[in-house]
Length: 176
Image: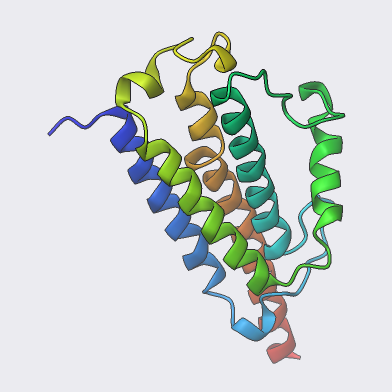
């Protein structure tokens, strides 16, 4: 059976979202909030989850402002696409006081809200470039997939590294 791009987007987003949490759950709960030694920006599961959450929040703002007829400032006020690394660093710094359990709750809720936004639209509305003025030369699909299934794939890779590092550290302790 041929499925629409919208259905595929929803399915891939849900599958990747579930896979992300399955990776986190491979680490014993008492170890899940430990940061790893890395030169990467995201040093623990919370950092990764809050990154996703904040990008969901930005997408929701773009969507809300765009659908209200405004021209949303992207990616965020004070930032241009060319300095996205600075924005992502600021996101990471902003959420250092959030616990992993809070991050999980926030991300699960924002994921549901974004899935609901996708479900509001027909496949044509999602796939047609310039269908909505605020998406400029693009389509809703590019915004939705970048902040759901594709972003979750990125997060899966990050969380696999964190999980594997934490498990290796645990094995090393047992060997000593």
